[in-house]
Length: 330
Image 1: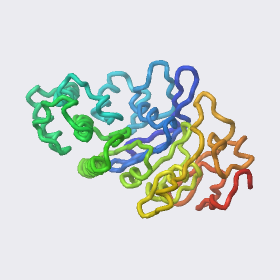
Image 2 (image 1 turned 45 degrees about the horizontal axis):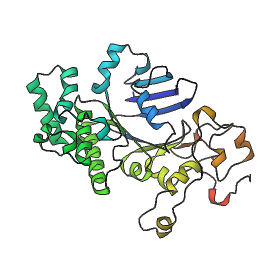
Image 3 (image 1 turned 135 degrees about the horizontal axis):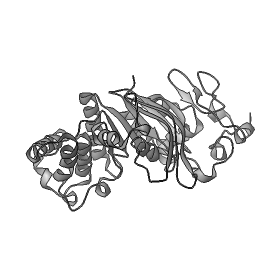
Image 4 (image 1 turned 60 degrees about the vertical axis):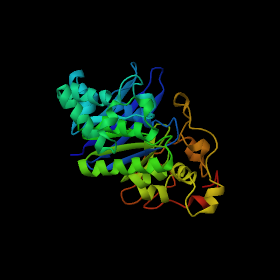
Protein backbone atom coordinates (compact mmCIF):
# COMPACT_ATOMS: atom_id res chain seq x y z
CA UNK A 1 0.00 0.00 0.00
CA UNK A 2 1.31 3.46 -0.92
CA UNK A 3 1.79 6.12 1.71
CA UNK A 4 -0.17 8.57 -0.46
CA UNK A 5 -2.41 7.74 -3.40
CA UNK A 6 -4.20 10.65 -5.09
CA UNK A 7 -6.88 9.60 -7.56
CA UNK A 8 -8.79 11.93 -9.86
CA UNK A 9 -8.36 14.94 -7.59
CA UNK A 10 -10.32 17.97 -8.81
CA UNK A 11 -10.52 21.27 -6.94
CA UNK A 12 -13.10 23.86 -7.98
CA UNK A 13 -13.18 27.22 -6.26
CA UNK A 14 -16.39 29.12 -5.55
CA UNK A 15 -17.42 30.66 -8.85
CA UNK A 16 -16.66 27.57 -10.89
CA UNK A 17 -12.91 27.86 -11.61
CA UNK A 18 -11.23 24.43 -11.56
CA UNK A 19 -7.69 24.98 -10.26
CA UNK A 20 -6.83 21.25 -10.16
CA UNK A 21 -8.30 18.89 -12.76
CA UNK A 22 -8.19 15.13 -12.40
CA UNK A 23 -4.74 14.69 -10.88
CA UNK A 24 -3.39 11.20 -10.10
CA UNK A 25 -0.23 10.87 -7.98
CA UNK A 26 1.36 8.15 -5.85
CA UNK A 27 4.11 8.33 -3.25
CA UNK A 28 5.81 5.61 -1.21
CA UNK A 29 7.31 6.06 2.26
CA UNK A 30 10.94 7.12 2.11
CA UNK A 31 10.52 8.57 -1.38
CA UNK A 32 10.33 12.14 -2.68
CA UNK A 33 8.09 13.66 -5.32
CA UNK A 34 8.60 17.08 -6.88
CA UNK A 35 5.76 19.23 -8.24
CA UNK A 36 6.83 21.83 -10.78
CA UNK A 37 5.14 24.47 -12.89
CA UNK A 38 4.63 28.19 -13.31
CA UNK A 39 2.66 30.24 -10.82
CA UNK A 40 -1.04 29.58 -11.31
CA UNK A 41 -0.68 25.97 -12.44
CA UNK A 42 -2.35 24.51 -9.34
CA UNK A 43 0.63 23.27 -7.30
CA UNK A 44 -0.18 25.00 -4.01
CA UNK A 45 -3.91 24.34 -4.39
CA UNK A 46 -3.15 20.64 -4.74
CA UNK A 47 -0.97 20.72 -1.62
CA UNK A 48 -3.67 22.43 0.45
CA UNK A 49 -6.30 20.03 -0.85
CA UNK A 50 -4.37 17.10 0.61
CA UNK A 51 -5.39 18.29 4.08
CA UNK A 52 -8.61 20.11 3.15
CA UNK A 53 -7.15 23.49 3.98
CA UNK A 54 -8.91 25.37 1.17
CA UNK A 55 -11.44 28.20 1.65
CA UNK A 56 -15.08 27.54 2.43
CA UNK A 57 -17.11 27.00 -0.72
CA UNK A 58 -14.33 25.11 -2.49
CA UNK A 59 -15.45 21.79 -3.98
CA UNK A 60 -13.00 18.87 -3.82
CA UNK A 61 -13.71 15.58 -5.57
CA UNK A 62 -11.68 12.42 -6.11
CA UNK A 63 -9.70 10.52 -3.48
CA UNK A 64 -6.71 11.38 -1.28
CA UNK A 65 -5.72 8.07 0.30
CA UNK A 66 -3.26 8.37 3.18
CA UNK A 67 -2.24 4.85 4.21
CA UNK A 68 -5.46 3.73 2.53
CA UNK A 69 -7.73 6.17 4.41
CA UNK A 70 -9.48 8.85 2.37
CA UNK A 71 -8.71 12.32 3.74
CA UNK A 72 -11.63 13.82 1.80
CA UNK A 73 -14.22 11.75 3.68
CA UNK A 74 -12.69 11.95 7.18
CA UNK A 75 -14.77 13.35 10.00
CA UNK A 76 -13.49 16.58 11.50
CA UNK A 77 -12.00 14.95 14.61
CA UNK A 78 -10.04 12.42 12.57
CA UNK A 79 -8.87 15.09 10.11
CA UNK A 80 -7.66 17.27 12.98
CA UNK A 81 -5.60 14.34 14.26
CA UNK A 82 -4.09 13.68 10.81
CA UNK A 83 -2.98 17.29 10.40
CA UNK A 84 0.54 17.67 11.85
CA UNK A 85 0.64 14.10 13.17
CA UNK A 86 0.04 12.36 9.81
CA UNK A 87 0.82 15.07 7.27
CA UNK A 88 2.50 18.40 7.91
CA UNK A 89 3.13 21.39 5.66
CA UNK A 90 6.12 23.69 5.29
CA UNK A 91 4.51 26.83 3.95
CA UNK A 92 6.07 29.22 1.47
CA UNK A 93 7.68 32.25 3.14
CA UNK A 94 8.63 31.47 6.74
CA UNK A 95 8.45 35.12 7.81
CA UNK A 96 4.79 35.24 6.79
CA UNK A 97 3.97 31.85 8.33
CA UNK A 98 5.50 32.41 11.78
CA UNK A 99 3.76 34.57 14.37
CA UNK A 100 6.01 37.65 14.73
CA UNK A 101 5.09 38.33 18.37
CA UNK A 102 5.68 34.79 19.72
CA UNK A 103 8.97 33.06 20.40
CA UNK A 104 9.72 30.36 17.84
CA UNK A 105 10.07 27.71 20.55
CA UNK A 106 6.49 28.31 21.68
CA UNK A 107 5.29 27.95 18.10
CA UNK A 108 7.12 24.65 17.64
CA UNK A 109 5.81 23.37 20.98
CA UNK A 110 2.17 24.20 20.22
CA UNK A 111 1.40 21.14 18.01
CA UNK A 112 3.32 18.92 20.43
CA UNK A 113 1.10 20.07 23.28
CA UNK A 114 -2.08 19.72 21.21
CA UNK A 115 -1.44 16.39 19.50
CA UNK A 116 0.86 14.49 21.86
CA UNK A 117 -0.53 15.70 25.18
CA UNK A 118 2.98 16.51 26.39
CA UNK A 119 3.66 18.53 29.52
CA UNK A 120 5.09 22.04 29.02
CA UNK A 121 8.49 20.82 30.22
CA UNK A 122 8.36 17.84 27.87
CA UNK A 123 7.37 20.07 24.96
CA UNK A 124 10.31 22.39 25.68
CA UNK A 125 12.73 19.45 25.68
CA UNK A 126 11.28 18.16 22.42
CA UNK A 127 11.54 21.64 20.88
CA UNK A 128 15.23 21.84 21.77
CA UNK A 129 15.83 18.42 20.21
CA UNK A 130 14.04 19.42 17.02
CA UNK A 131 16.02 22.64 16.68
CA UNK A 132 19.27 20.73 17.06
CA UNK A 133 18.13 18.20 14.45
CA UNK A 134 17.70 21.00 11.91
CA UNK A 135 21.06 22.56 12.77
CA UNK A 136 20.10 25.29 15.23
CA UNK A 137 21.14 25.61 18.90
CA UNK A 138 18.34 24.76 21.32
CA UNK A 139 18.77 28.22 22.85
CA UNK A 140 17.32 29.78 19.68
CA UNK A 141 13.91 28.65 20.92
CA UNK A 142 13.75 31.93 22.86
CA UNK A 143 14.19 34.05 19.71
CA UNK A 144 11.44 35.88 17.88
CA UNK A 145 11.22 35.38 14.09
CA UNK A 146 12.71 38.79 13.29
CA UNK A 147 15.82 37.86 15.29
CA UNK A 148 16.60 34.98 12.92
CA UNK A 149 17.98 34.96 9.40
CA UNK A 150 15.92 33.70 6.46
CA UNK A 151 17.67 30.33 6.51
CA UNK A 152 17.21 30.00 10.27
CA UNK A 153 13.50 30.78 9.98
CA UNK A 154 13.15 28.13 7.30
CA UNK A 155 14.85 25.62 9.62
CA UNK A 156 12.32 26.56 12.32
CA UNK A 157 9.51 25.82 9.87
CA UNK A 158 11.02 22.40 9.12
CA UNK A 159 11.41 21.70 12.86
CA UNK A 160 7.74 22.61 13.33
CA UNK A 161 6.75 20.26 10.50
CA UNK A 162 8.64 17.43 12.21
CA UNK A 163 7.22 18.16 15.67
CA UNK A 164 4.59 15.43 15.68
CA UNK A 165 6.59 12.86 13.69
CA UNK A 166 4.39 12.86 10.56
CA UNK A 167 4.60 10.21 7.84
CA UNK A 168 4.38 12.78 5.04
CA UNK A 169 5.74 16.33 4.66
CA UNK A 170 4.56 18.74 1.96
CA UNK A 171 7.06 21.55 1.40
CA UNK A 172 5.75 24.47 -0.67
CA UNK A 173 8.70 26.42 -2.11
CA UNK A 174 10.87 25.76 0.98
CA UNK A 175 13.93 27.56 -0.43
CA UNK A 176 12.30 30.57 -2.09
CA UNK A 177 14.17 33.86 -1.50
CA UNK A 178 17.15 32.10 0.11
CA UNK A 179 20.65 32.63 -1.24
CA UNK A 180 22.22 29.66 -3.02
CA UNK A 181 24.47 28.66 -0.11
CA UNK A 182 21.61 28.55 2.39
CA UNK A 183 19.38 26.91 -0.22
CA UNK A 184 21.90 24.09 -0.60
CA UNK A 185 22.05 23.64 3.19
CA UNK A 186 18.26 23.44 3.49
CA UNK A 187 18.04 20.93 0.64
CA UNK A 188 20.72 18.72 2.20
CA UNK A 189 18.90 18.92 5.53
CA UNK A 190 15.62 17.83 3.92
CA UNK A 191 17.32 14.93 2.13
CA UNK A 192 18.91 13.75 5.37
CA UNK A 193 15.68 13.91 7.35
CA UNK A 194 13.75 11.98 4.69
CA UNK A 195 16.39 9.24 4.67
CA UNK A 196 16.72 9.01 8.47
CA UNK A 197 13.01 9.06 9.25
CA UNK A 198 11.68 7.13 6.22
CA UNK A 199 9.36 10.04 5.45
CA UNK A 200 7.44 10.73 2.30
CA UNK A 201 8.13 14.19 0.90
CA UNK A 202 6.31 16.29 -1.68
CA UNK A 203 8.36 19.33 -2.66
CA UNK A 204 6.79 22.14 -4.68
CA UNK A 205 8.93 24.51 -6.73
CA UNK A 206 9.11 26.36 -10.02
CA UNK A 207 12.80 25.39 -10.19
CA UNK A 208 13.23 22.07 -12.01
CA UNK A 209 16.96 22.00 -11.25
CA UNK A 210 16.30 21.99 -7.50
CA UNK A 211 13.67 19.28 -7.83
CA UNK A 212 15.86 17.14 -10.12
CA UNK A 213 18.68 17.27 -7.57
CA UNK A 214 16.44 16.53 -4.58
CA UNK A 215 13.53 14.31 -5.65
CA UNK A 216 13.16 10.76 -6.91
CA UNK A 217 10.27 11.58 -9.23
CA UNK A 218 8.96 14.77 -10.78
CA UNK A 219 5.46 15.78 -11.88
CA UNK A 220 5.05 18.87 -14.06
CA UNK A 221 1.70 20.68 -13.81
CA UNK A 222 0.04 23.01 -16.29
CA UNK A 223 -3.44 24.52 -16.04
CA UNK A 224 -4.34 22.28 -13.11
CA UNK A 225 -3.24 19.00 -14.68
CA UNK A 226 -0.13 16.84 -14.61
CA UNK A 227 1.30 16.98 -18.13
CA UNK A 228 4.44 14.92 -17.49
CA UNK A 229 5.58 12.59 -14.72
CA UNK A 230 8.60 10.35 -14.32
CA UNK A 231 12.08 9.99 -12.79
CA UNK A 232 13.15 13.50 -11.81
CA UNK A 233 16.52 13.60 -13.54
CA UNK A 234 15.09 12.18 -16.78
CA UNK A 235 12.22 14.66 -16.88
CA UNK A 236 14.62 17.55 -16.26
CA UNK A 237 17.21 16.52 -18.83
CA UNK A 238 14.98 14.94 -21.49
CA UNK A 239 11.40 16.15 -21.10
CA UNK A 240 8.81 14.55 -23.37
CA UNK A 241 6.10 17.22 -23.07
CA UNK A 242 6.84 20.57 -24.78
CA UNK A 243 5.83 22.53 -21.68
CA UNK A 244 8.14 20.53 -19.41
CA UNK A 245 10.92 20.96 -21.98
CA UNK A 246 10.37 24.74 -22.11
CA UNK A 247 10.30 24.94 -18.31
CA UNK A 248 13.61 23.08 -18.09
CA UNK A 249 15.21 25.22 -20.82
CA UNK A 250 14.32 28.44 -18.98
CA UNK A 251 17.05 27.76 -16.40
CA UNK A 252 20.72 28.29 -17.30
CA UNK A 253 22.97 25.27 -16.89
CA UNK A 254 26.45 25.35 -15.40
CA UNK A 255 29.04 24.88 -18.13
CA UNK A 256 26.64 25.82 -20.92
CA UNK A 257 27.36 29.42 -22.05
CA UNK A 258 24.49 29.39 -24.54
CA UNK A 259 21.88 28.77 -21.85
CA UNK A 260 23.56 31.24 -19.50
CA UNK A 261 23.51 34.20 -21.85
CA UNK A 262 20.32 33.36 -23.73
CA UNK A 263 17.98 31.27 -21.56
CA UNK A 264 14.89 30.16 -23.40
CA UNK A 265 11.34 30.36 -22.22
CA UNK A 266 7.74 30.74 -23.30
CA UNK A 267 5.79 33.83 -24.18
CA UNK A 268 2.56 34.51 -22.36
CA UNK A 269 1.13 33.11 -19.14
CA UNK A 270 -0.80 30.04 -18.02
CA UNK A 271 -4.52 30.34 -18.80
CA UNK A 272 -7.11 31.61 -16.35
CA UNK A 273 -8.72 28.53 -14.73
CA UNK A 274 -12.12 30.14 -15.34
CA UNK A 275 -11.45 30.52 -19.08
CA UNK A 276 -9.46 27.51 -20.25
CA UNK A 277 -8.92 27.15 -24.01
CA UNK A 278 -10.54 24.26 -25.84
CA UNK A 279 -8.60 21.09 -26.47
CA UNK A 280 -5.14 20.91 -24.88
CA UNK A 281 -4.83 23.87 -22.51
CA UNK A 282 -1.20 24.37 -23.55
CA UNK A 283 -1.83 24.61 -27.30
CA UNK A 284 -1.94 28.47 -27.53
CA UNK A 285 1.68 28.60 -26.25
CA UNK A 286 2.98 25.34 -27.69
CA UNK A 287 5.93 25.62 -30.12
CA UNK A 288 4.98 22.34 -31.85
CA UNK A 289 1.19 22.61 -31.89
CA UNK A 290 -0.90 20.52 -34.28
CA UNK A 291 -4.34 21.41 -35.61
CA UNK A 292 -5.92 18.65 -33.54
CA UNK A 293 -4.51 20.12 -30.30
CA UNK A 294 -7.07 22.94 -30.40
CA UNK A 295 -10.01 20.53 -30.29
CA UNK A 296 -8.77 17.39 -28.52
CA UNK A 297 -7.43 17.27 -24.98
CA UNK A 298 -4.63 14.84 -24.19
CA UNK A 299 -4.47 12.26 -21.43
CA UNK A 300 -1.25 11.02 -19.85
CA UNK A 301 0.22 8.19 -21.91
CA UNK A 302 3.33 6.02 -21.69
CA UNK A 303 6.46 7.97 -22.62
CA UNK A 304 9.16 5.47 -21.66
CA UNK A 305 9.95 3.29 -18.66
CA UNK A 306 8.13 4.73 -15.65
CA UNK A 307 7.27 7.90 -17.56
CA UNK A 308 4.03 9.51 -18.74
CA UNK A 309 3.31 12.62 -20.81
CA UNK A 310 0.10 14.24 -22.05
CA UNK A 311 1.09 15.15 -25.59
CA UNK A 312 -0.12 13.94 -28.99
CA UNK A 313 3.49 13.70 -30.15
CA UNK A 314 4.25 11.05 -27.54
CA UNK A 315 3.33 7.92 -29.46
CA UNK A 316 5.61 5.34 -27.89
CA UNK A 317 8.60 4.90 -25.61
CA UNK A 318 10.18 8.08 -26.99
CA UNK A 319 8.84 11.46 -28.08
CA UNK A 320 9.37 13.03 -31.47
CA UNK A 321 12.27 15.51 -31.56
CA UNK A 322 10.57 18.80 -30.81
CA UNK A 323 13.37 20.85 -32.37
CA UNK A 324 12.58 19.44 -35.81
CA UNK A 325 8.89 20.28 -35.61
CA UNK A 326 7.36 23.64 -36.47
CA UNK A 327 4.13 25.22 -35.23
CA UNK A 328 1.15 24.05 -37.21
CA UNK A 329 2.97 21.18 -38.93
CA UNK A 330 1.99 17.51 -38.55
